[in-house]
Amino acid sequence: MPVTTQSFKLAKPAIYTLSALVIYSIATTSFSAQSPAANKLGIGRKYSTIERMNLERLRAVNADKSRIQKARQPVKLQTGFNDYKAILHAHAEDSAHTGGTRPELLAAAKNAGVKIIMLTDHVRPPKDFINDSWRGVRDGVLFIPGAESEGFLVYPQRSIIQAHISKSFKSRDEYVRLVKEPVGQDRGDIFLSHVEEKGDWDTSQLDGLEIYNIHSDLLDEAEFVRWLQGSFTNPDRLKQLETGLAEFPAEVFGALQDYLPTIIAKWDRDLPSHRLTGVAANDCHHNQLFTVKAVADDAIEVTAFPDPPRKITTKQAPRIAEMLNGRNVGDVISKLDFDPYERSLSFVATHILVNELKEPSVRQALRQGHAFVAHDWLCDATGFAFIAERNGKRIGVMGDEVKLEKGLKLRLAAPVAGMIKLFWNGLVVQEANADKLDFAVTEAGVYRAEIWLTLDGEQRPWIYSNPIRVR
View 1 (cartoon, rainbow, N blue to C red):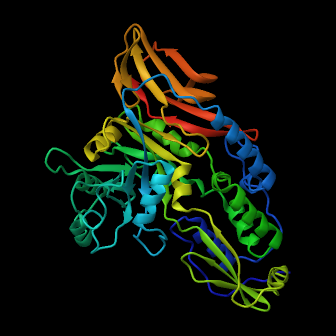
View 2 (view 1 turned 60 degrees about the horizontal axis):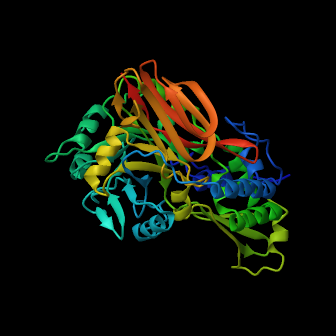
View 3 (view 1 turned 90 degrees about the vertical axis):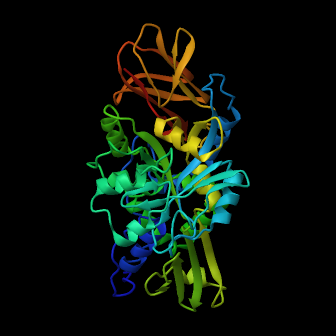
């Protein structure tokens, strides 16, 4: 029977990263080659995340994704704006658990077709997350400095580091006002982060919230984390992971993807009373890096960045002997990099509708809700349109408010066909498996849309529009 590793205890990690959770499992759990029971299946799923990691499943998803992408066509319905991919909730050079640099983030953005990076440094006084960061256009990519702080993504117009040092804000409301304090003609912006922990937080004074967060998506993956932890002592499963990452890297990264109904439900509850822009949170750090190394004739070390290595012996996990066969002490048996910046930036983005790539325009578009969220790893959603028309004339786009009058119609168009779901005040009022939808509006309310794509027999969320408000 396998035995536990070491007798010390680790606190459950506050930062919900895959590496943190796995290294916690390695330090506190028995090693077993047995596969745990499958995760509880989410909306639209046929397979658990463990099953999705099977090479047959990855291959099938890749084939369907390629078919969908080949069918992609330019969208004829026009919003009147340029569509720029933006990344919110991005970390670089800002903590011990962040593995990437800002130059690496810039290079990845260029390769992924991302034009806007809204940084969210961890607050580390006296370092100033505004004045000591990047701001402005660098090699075609617009950088806007900010922080992940006090439960929010914050983008103040000026430095607020002294307020952090002195803790001059005494409440959540005071902090919101501090972030939004005007400088000249403009003000700061603030979004609710990690919404799964904050269902009862007031959003009336916020600019928006994260309707999808990669690390929020990880929280129900305890069985997968245990499966992954066991893979480092199981040569067959380790080979499966290596092959999957080599041949289907985007599909491996996307295996965790779920619809987050609790977060979407909060968004729908809050939308009727105030504008609240839905954004994606990549929460990218480039820190999901695992290394397996031979350290003795009967032992390996598993390192999950940035934690110290954990030693495991053949007595604890007998199949380690197979992994050590023919290896010398010091040899790297395996190195798995799950989240290089380009992969996480390509997974999901907030598409922002603006006429020019300038910071004031981007901020204003986000406040107005002129944006949508898309899992572009499935298919590039650039050009998606959700507009309001009256008598054939465009009178508004997603994020706008329009009057309920005769002849009002909502129109939607996407680059490929999928399952379109039109919501009114959180309820589905029309569905169509198509690349376009027209809806005659007869009732006031908040209208938003989702599009889902089918891959390997599963429906996966692709696009989330921001709403059009009809008054």
